[in-house]
Image: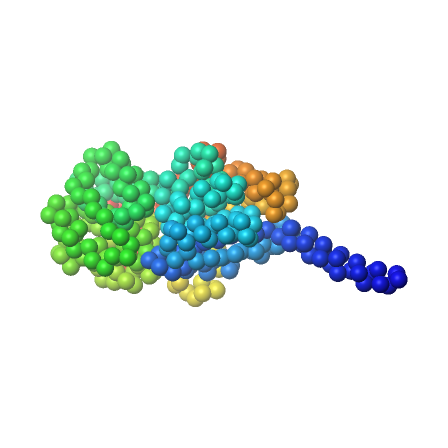
Length: 387
């Protein structure tokens, strides 16, 4: 009878033990644009999650990575699945601004902290009731617009034409850039848009050429941003061409080819980490990521977009020990504690900058998180003074 009782209880005890282990596990839900127009951004992000620690503060970490195909509806569907079915403690994603903006309501409704890997300042500003749960790792469009307009002013640019994505990324860039250009006395003479999947922008470029600008800013990301640049070159444009940090990967160089030569853009320091002086506070932490990625995926394959995923992992690793002082994973109390711990991140060195979050700043980067870069001989070069 005693033996029979033990045999009956043992499976139940094992089940309880495994349930306890599952409760102790930290679950991270990720949605990235690994296919679709933003695939050149999303693939290195997806690859990076395989490099993140599987244990933090004694707790195992599971990264559930889904592909949203650069589609807003799919990103929301993924997010709801991760929250309701997988019951994740943290959301990371998405790769692009429209998808990230669409995810915010799900994060807020479920009380799940979210770290975006997209650039628009509107993802985290202002920190209202919805954005209370949302953070991000890439530099803001407003942050990078400051660097571009400063370089333009120093280079004597007085008129500029703008062409950007016909979505939240392009709109955010135009809004921030236009404000700063006006302050620098730089006149915007054209404002054009194109969609990520477009195969021709000839009409838009003809309008830009007719305005005869000193410079053109292309506000796109990934390989689709090469299309306006190649069309400008085909039409004989001789002025300066600026891109955003949305093109800072080798796939853009490959697709744009010789038409990229001379292009200027702001970027996170990790893009040119080896060219930075040893005194640069980001060099060491940027090289840690670069070396880890290239060891896993081959020399020359590192991307700034993977760095955004790496820095999301850094935020998680720094926040978990603090959150565990309050609650165990898998509970609303832990999710809230994790959110609070991320918001209180101080002096965290990542691939893109030194992070100091606050209740009113859910990015936490300063001017140390950007450099100006120029494409020279098909390679990224740290840019010197404007001329």
